[in-house]
Every structure is written in C-alpha cells, then in structure tokens.
Amino acid sequence: MKLRKKLAIIQGTVDDLYDSNNENDYSVGVIKSMSLFHDVVIACPDTKESNKVKELAELWGIDCFFGSVDNVLDRFLAVSNKYMPEIIARIQLRAFWVDPELIMNTIEMLENDIEYIDYQNDVNYALGIDLFTFEALKKVDKLISSELNVHKKHTFEFSPWALMRDKSKFNVAVLNYQKKWDKKKVRKIKSKLNDLIGNDENQQGVTPENPGSRYRMAESFLNINDIVLDIACGKGGGTKFCSGSCKQIHGFDYNVEYINHAKLTYINDDYGNVFFHYGTDNEISKLDIKFDKVISLHTLEHADNDFRFLKNIKSSLKLGGMLILEVPRLLEYPLGEPLFPFHEREYTLSGVRELLVNAGFEIIKEKGGNRNNYTDVENARETLVFIAINPG
Image 1 (tube, rainbow, N blue to C red):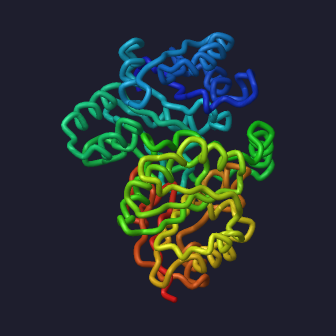
Image 2 (image 1 turned 120 degrees about the vertical axis):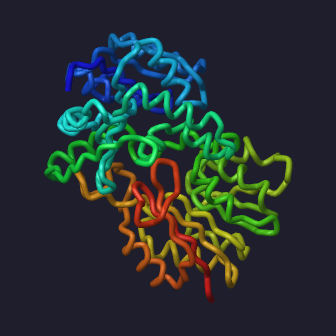
Image 3 (image 1 turned 30 degrees about the vertical axis):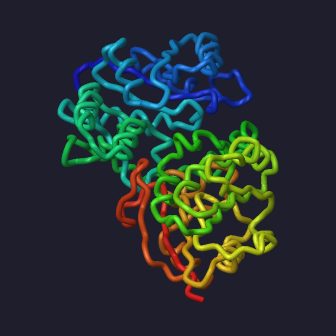
C-alpha cells in the first residue's frame, strides 16, 4: 500500500476521563507511541465540560477539536475536513487497553480499494480500532442524508462505522484475528481498570432525550396500559424515556446516589407515572406489585447469582408478563472473558437460553446487538437480547 496520510481521531467526552492526567491511562499513550499517524486529535462535543479534555490534550501535546454534541458523524467530518487525511482511525479516549499488534494488523489490511476494516464477530473490537477511508465517511453522510427513519438516522450519526460494516454498500475487509492473550496480560489490564474506575459502571449518556439504542428497543415492547419495572435503572434517564409509553413505570437500583438523582430529576414529570426505589433484586417483592413488563438491560452480568435474579424477576411478573432482557455477549478473542471488572460474567447464546428456561421463562424472541443496531441473534456481536414470558 502506498503511503497515505493517516489521522487518528480519539473520540471522547468528559465522562471518559479517569482521575488521572497520565496519557498512558488513556488510548493517547498507545497511539502516540506507535508513530503510525500523521496527526492525532481528540474530538469532543462542543460543551463547557469538554474544556477539561482540552486541558489534558494540551498537556499531552495533541490537538483537541470541539464539534457537534450529538452527531458524531458531523464531528468526525469536521475534524477530517481540517486535516484532510486519506485514512482515519477511530479510538475511544478511555481505551488504554487498545492493542498495538491488533492496530498494526488492521492497518496492514487496508489496501487501496478497501473502505472499512472489520473484525470477525468473536473479536472484541474495543481492543482495536475502527479503520476507514475519509471517502467512506463522506459516503455515510450521503447515504443517511435522505433517511426518513429518525431512529436509524440517529444511530448512524452516532455510529457511522456501523453502516460501514454493510458489505452491500461498502468494500469491507474482515481481519481474521484468532489470538488469545495470556491470562497475566488480561489480569494486568483488569487490575488497572479496577484502580481507575473501581466497580462503578459509568452511567453516561442515558437521558430521556438520548436514551440510546437499548432503551429505544425496550420501549418498543411497551403498551400504554402496562405497569413496568426497570431493574437497575441507573440515574433514571431511560426510565423517564419509557414513561410516555406505559401506564406506570418503576425504576429500581441498588445505588442510592443514582436513585436520589433520579428522584430529583424525573419524579415531577409530565405524566406523574414515574417512581424510583432503592434496593436489590431480592427486595422487589417489597413493592407488592405484579408487573406487566420487566426491563433488564445489562444487569444480569452484575448479579451475584444470575439464576436467583431471574427467579426474582419471574416472581414479580404477572402471569403472561414479559421480560425484556439484554446482556453482553462473551467474545472469544483476544480475552475470552469480560474486559470490565464490574462484570461478574458475560454470556454465550446457549448459556442464556439455558438459564432462562431453567428459571421458568418461555423465550418468544431473540435478537443480537451489533454496533448500536439489532440483528439476527446468530449475527450478534456485543449483546444478546431475549424477550421471554412468565408462563406460570
């Protein structure tokens, strides 16, 4: 491949910052050390809070670009128009764990006619990069400019690389990476993550205005007469988002700070049908409510006992009531185990099926999560989605 100008865009917000100013606690340290890119820039939403990221960028000797708050595609286009690269690599700011070997292997695959490099579905792409041409980025912009589906348009504006994976629209090469890291290396990464973030999973980005694909998916299963439980509701933004589609919704979380925030922020809403409760899944019965629907989005992997968790959920559901469950998929390469220390476990497709059936549920629908989109469960990349009912 002839020499082509390469730009590394590090995508970040203030929510990605650890309590550290060390560039090696972020992807910045790895990317700078590789000396592969002509330019390295952090792309942030244009908010007052992003000044904290800009200060760190100045400390690290790299540029920081402020752009669209919600439209990542627009932000990346603006950055790229400034630097005019041929090749763009996208990396998350907080991802100090990105692997130089995987990055190098990805770049080496980018021949002249390739627009995007993908990994096979068993690879944790968070350990690598999204690599694409500037022309591919502009092509995404053209493709979605006339998109009438607002949710789909928003999805691709937030994650343009999700559309680049579409082989019917882009020339895609797939890197067949089947290397497993040794356990010592994995433990070192997870230990560092634990030191930086502890066991508090970041609750960024979920607001009624920007609920993310998970809550949009869950909301599509709700009916106006439903009484709903949102278990592990976090700070309540997703609960509030769903409140317009049901009769009543109860957010439940074991983090008292999250619940207090939710009560202060959302309890006096327009519908008067939102309630928040502090407690664990073992305490749901104290509500003395039988629910039509239970939403459980990325909760099961945190439970001390996932089987007991599902049994508690089943006991809270009406006869015929529905569980809307999403869990992270266990990826084989290169870790073969969860990256994040606050995940007790992650799941295979057969594993969740068996767990649900043993807990007494009847599975009626399965889907897979793939770069903020939902697809056939066999094509799942990051997440597994199950719609199951309580048959009695």
